[in-house]
Image (cartoon, rainbow, N blue to C red):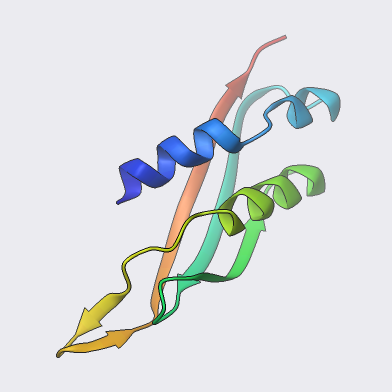
Length: 91
């Protein structure tokens, strides 16, 4: 599942925001969210050195398609998920 998420985010994420914001080098954005019992992404938060990058990360993660919800003891459960988004911007 995380491989599919990584591909999706890599395709949809607008890395030019970093360059436009004069952010260069290795860029790391920490994203945390939950997958609810219906498989929807909810409660998305991001932390980066630039607010525009945080907003872009939140935008893209909210676009993720419905995900198979977690199951514990035969019941669907909310699953917390954290995902680093890392890329490199060169001068």
